[in-house]
Image 1 (spheres, helix red, strand yellow):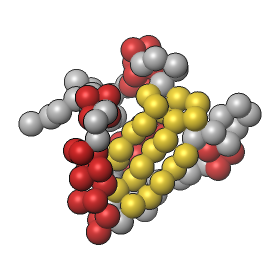
Image 2 (spheres, rainbow, N blue to C red; image 1 turned 180 degrees about the horizontal axis):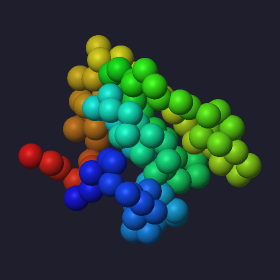
Image 3 (cartoon, one colour; image 1 turned 90 degrees about the horizontal axis):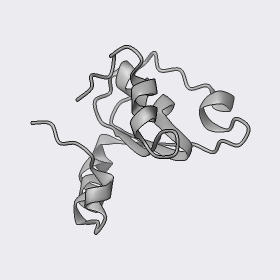
Image 4 (cartoon, rainbow, N blue to C red; image 1 turned 120 degrees about the vertical axis):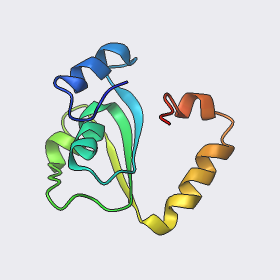
Length: 105
């Protein structure tokens, strides 16, 4: 298991992920390091969903983060009011084993 502020974590994720990064990332902590990690760890055409509050100091650079050449990442923000609906969609998905890679208890 990795911590979001672990050194070289994006490189470690990309080394084990197919396609140069994860296809989707769901960020629920509101922690700056986790938010930046999600943006940096998704592969081309990957998607990042932010649930809850974004860190005040999160910087999203539109060109390199979302639409650089041959890149098409999608960043989506949800409010905490949407959290239960987002979780319900994930839990009811027939692809849940593909959506959830790790469970921390």
